[in-house]
Image (tube, rainbow, N blue to C red; front, side, top):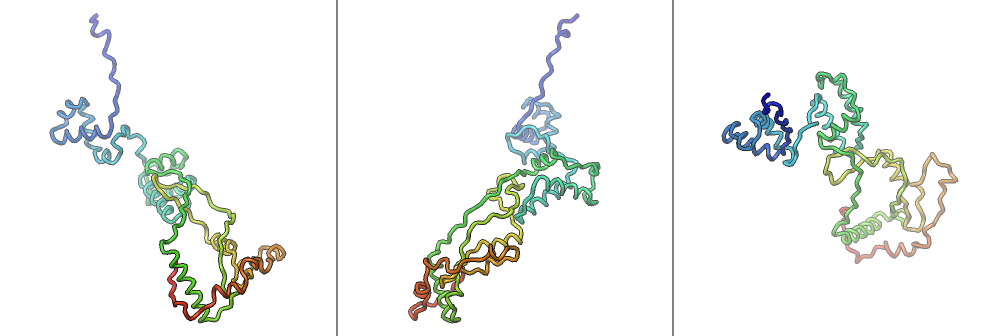
Amino acid sequence: MDPSTSNPAPKQKRRSYEAAFKLKVVSRAEKSNNSIASREFGVDEKQVREWRKMKADLEKIPKAKKARRGLTTPYGALETELHKWVMECHQNVYCVSRMGIRLRALQMAKDDKLKAPGIENVVASVGWCTGFMNRYGLCLRQRTKISQKLPKDLDEKVMSFHSFIIKQRKIHNYDLGDIGNMDETPMTFDLPSNRTVASLGDKTVLLRTTEDMVKLAFKKCGISNAMDGSEDSALYEDDSCDSDDCELCDNVYDDNLTSATAEALFGHTDEEEESSFEGF
């Protein structure tokens, strides 16, 4: 028995290569041919042919990435339209959850325009949703909040606004009780989720609240104080609450600002310059 055949050479382990290396081999093959590139870089000629076919895809992925598993799907048209829907919701500041993506996919699978082999068997599972988000660079993000920056010419705008109020009071002969100051105060609402699906790398993630919630916030978050020292109770009128609970005390800020002080602050003089307030 030939000893050379009794101990066959061990099977060579299949190697994985980075995208940068594959592109380097492809570049060499394009300048010469597949055979020369395979000999110089020590790879099979078949691999060189495959890499040349996928050159466009290799240029899109990170240079250090090796395997390209998990990037294909039989429902390409459906996922493309689904991704457009997610981006539209994100653009309109609507909350998008993973469950919302799955339900939307099931709804879109019934569309005849997106028909594909086997699409009737789509179940939109949790694993599929994870794969979809990975394929399109999506992730679950926490809503961010950015503080409003004060304008550079804030002092000038405040003075312009004061002059505007004084001018309007002189023209229309307003009473001090008709001029109010609005202060914001935080309130607790039935807010939507603070987490939404967004693209990887987004610095700002905003969410929209409902129109009714905004109206309620404007109505009940504003504490209005008239300049004559009384409190405006009109903003607190609510048919859903009892009269005893909604009854407000008069002149709760009487110690902070008297009528005489308000007259001194907003009394118009001839030396006051006329100003056209354009807003903050």
